[in-house]
Image (tube, rainbow, N blue to C red; front, top):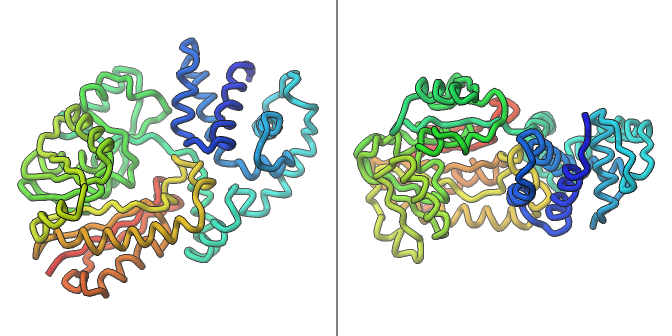
Length: 403
């Protein structure tokens, strides 16, 4: 593999912004890739994938290269050299890269790979938390799975096309996909490619949505003509799926506290031809009170630690702090207790997170069902989805019915 100086320097620049300046990896990569229009898909792939892998294994590479935070540029080059040696890439003769003891790097890799917190490159507190919550065996498997690169999965927009038509359309454009058993609207890309530039995306034939996330729509059991509330809609990945399952019939109210996210949802809804979505900003408790006892279905896709989606957000490992878990569980409780009041008698409530921690999941649901606010609800279904078992994001889903 021939290394090009400008590509490696782009990776170092990206790592500096992520590790030293605390910027989000996805935003940094997006910005860096716009730097040079001459870069082809292979060049862009090298920058993105190398950056993400180094973010994913930051602790391991830093340990092997014997550097500590805050990282200087020379530190980042040392870490990059470790990555290259472990990938079997011959190091270039550049002044930025000091003589690198390859045998020592491989020896230290073998040594530290025996210790999970180094091998999977996670902070001590997170490793202890995961083992305490899930047990050593499941946590060891799960964190290894969450360190794998996420595959690209599409969800067919049935308001516009069918799975077969989309698959053929993509194939005609040189993008090969495979259906996924157990995920009726999913197509998985055989190779990573920029599907956002395809005509089928621009025409609203699909959205990029992980397979685990696609299970939520069917789990909520929506039907055309219902009044459905997506209480934490965000930019609307799940909202759009619900609109398709409702066949654009009925009322789909998309709530969120962030106006900019709902603006993005409106844009996506137009492309998807999803006409029954009604975005509403939660500016005060009045917005929720107006909907009390009125919804056939309420989806609470609660804010969480995001531990189940580390495959696509590896920098979350380094941004997450123990105090955030305490703060977010309080927020989850407030949302569940408050927003559940929108469900009408006979209606259903789904509580969802992209976390794998019981304290954010079944313990929240259990606490709700044992409370005054939850005494009229009964648990009818519950799913724990682990990346180590499904191959996709970690998720939790609980479905409750109001008596």
